[in-house]
Image (cartoon, rainbow, N blue to C red; front, side):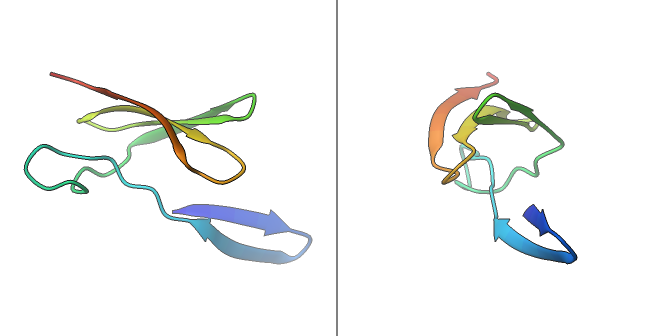
Length: 64
C-alpha cells in the first residue's frame, strides 16, 4: 500500500503487488526505495521499478 501524506491528512495513493508464476499477484513486497522518480520494490519473487507519479510498471526483474 502506498500512502500519501499532505499536511494533516494521510490517504492511500495506490496499491502495488508483485507478480508470481502461479498467481499473478501473490508475492508481498518486503522493501521499497525511491530513487529519483522511480519507486523500486523488492519481494521474494523479484525486483520491480514503477513510475513514482502514476505507479505504472517500468520494469520487472524476476528472481529465478
